[in-house]
Length: 493
Image (tube, rainbow, N blue to C red; front, side):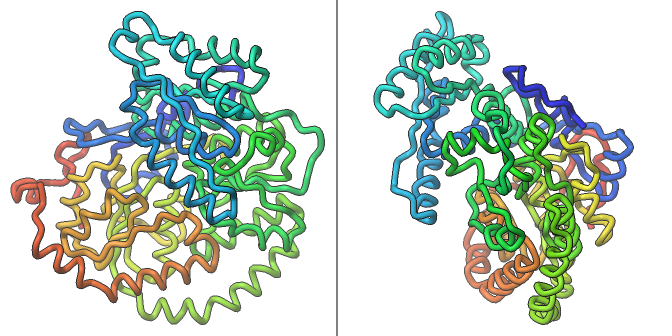
């Protein structure tokens, strides 16, 4: 277990804290074996097409806290994704019947002269302006490569103004250049919240923290049956709600990549138990997850009843879907934990997973529990997966592999990846809602969507006939891992 230190202003990046990697080619079984033996090393690429940024992932969580303001201490170009978060914020407000409010985002507009003379004064002025306009309950300051390089004293500014203005004010250190693994940004945001917002528990409650993105409230019914109430965090929480998450009976994470740090921090510091089990995707994963939930909440008998009745309801329909999908091939591209979870779900539907491009890999988790290792669960339960590629959105690798394997369908978690399957004439399904596949019902949800996608191939067939790829025939004939250090002689099945 990694000891979490909330006295430190910055989170330790995943490469150092967990030994996480962004480059691997082989089979899932080989990756699990290397990770468990402590012999996992990152493979650097001699050519890289793109990368994500920790700053965006930190902003993703902090920007949708209802009564807070986020100040981005950065050049104005770093504010280019504000509109996207604001769009999601307003759409999801409607889903939750919340009053429509635009995102409260500010940028300090660091310029060339500021990189010489410093931009701390600009930051202070921006914070004061944000407070005067909106009077938020808290202000978060996200850093950038520029503010990190010039070493502005962001912590000093926020501490000074917090005392003066009388509200929590927190510096979130999430400079993109510090980590190749952009999910470190989630850790940065949660580290900031635990340091500056969460209070020690005054009393324990019957609430269960649900650490999620912005998916639907699917846990309400389950937890109510067990005598508990769901507390969805962090998006759409208020500062007051976040102050009291240390009082929860337990923490559930919809995705360990997202919430592993926060779950571990709340358990280590405040004794809030984290549900340590494979994600509830597929039959075996859902069985294990529900039983762990029942154990932690002291509701084991009630959970067994839920397992029995729910399986009796869904299994007849599941068998029919399996009959239609058995033997169909699929390729998956997604973030780490969610991608691993999708593999379990697809295997339970009878489909053959021809490969996966997963954006990074954490060999261990902050909670130190092997039970949380979803990829190890996949390999143990369903067998090995060939063409397993840890790939931080390198589209050139993905196109090469898809061109060789040409699966019946590709499933993607992130929108920018879907076009590559479609251009090759492969029916491609984008699933943005991380809750769609959760639990026993999730198997039926996915089966229905997959069958709909397979039944509607005309668009991708036409697109493939009338579009061109930016990659030459020369590249499509190369080993897809030729630019990846280490063993580049990996066979593509």
